[in-house]
Length: 266
Image 1 (spheres, helix red, strand yellow):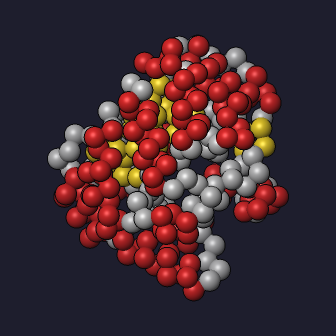
Image 2 (cartoon, helix red, strand yellow; image 1 turned 180 degrees about the horizontal axis):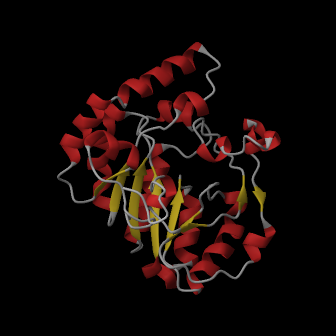
């Protein structure tokens, strides 16, 4: 199903009516990064080494944000890291002060989450965390997300935000270890108040540079792990859990309707 403007609702539009960023670039170095892939027309930013340096957008940081007609996602094209935390807090405060419901998406650094929870406690009811936790195996994480936090730090951040009384959710997109997804869901579920989203790695051969036999093996492993048969088996095992949500990449495999309008499939 398409949205009212005729476009298929996918990606960040499944979660929010609008996205806000504080700049561009991310030090995590994720090999599948869709945000970096979108910079194909900007060769200086499309290069992995250049992308690792965050460049703040001063106007975005200083802006007084309006009230949006639905949930707003922050950030969409970078992450929240110690070096840009102050800028991110300024934007979040402006969004929340305007009355917005804000979805904070991050591969979480524990120190950043502790600061956000402390500084934004007065806006607790307007904020939903969505932590990207793609695998429990740190060896896999080091290959695909080499400079992002380890699993234990992400899980610890989730538990911390949960115990501070914030609404919490998880994104397992992309699945980096599909054989462990069900067990990981079971481990994370006690600290989730809202939802756990599951999705495939999209456009692998376009976005991931295969520069070694090791990476070719990894790409092939991901492709095997998200073929239609495996996706249907994961769906069979998890579909009865109320917290589970499926990204558009999985809905098309198992026959579920996509979101009707942006921001509705929260």
